[in-house]
Length: 265
Image (tube, helix red, strand yellow):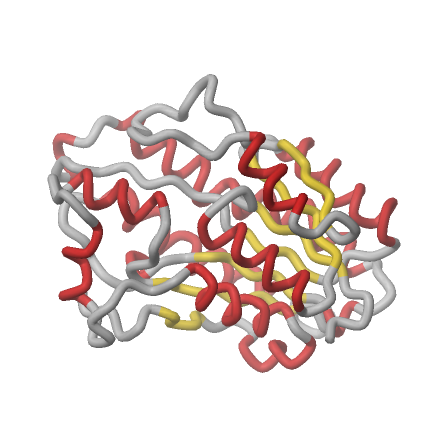
């Protein structure tokens, strides 16, 4: 059990983020669940609807005494500072942060990809992770148990593989891995650790969006890229992420955990 530990999770309204909130609560955490939860506008180039406030509230409703939902955009550093401060104000501590918020854009070769689409990927998938770290790490360093504190970024198999007509997404996820390695270096001697988790094809809205990019009817077509011969479940990734958040997860500091089922691209 988590023994009173507190986590902040971005991208918490659905997919891997929502499953991570569920798993952390199962493991005894209290959670600040953060999501943009806004369908009124979508970032430039994103071709699928984002999660809604109803989605976020549904996650919180499953854990009424353990989860506080917060609508915030990871591109907004001030909003993330407020969410991290809320964790300390309401629960007295912050032990872990999971940066799971991300978008995917693709469908064109690099030379035809609009710069605005690349900028969206950098703003959400990279700067969003950077902002999450910048807002949460100071609370961990100044908290009651820095040696038990963990920062976990959800990267992707796209961070170590080149994927067809997803060059911008490849750039963003490679950057997330570099960010985590640099953060781990900055944290030397503090007790706080940083790790990236790289999922493969996982049953989420983003995977269906990837299928749409490739003109596929269903995401089941991606089964062929996995030696497991199946699509991963968000709950499986959440268990891996929860371990990374634990005190025992310190052994993974600075590493990239491949939770891809053996993804071969």
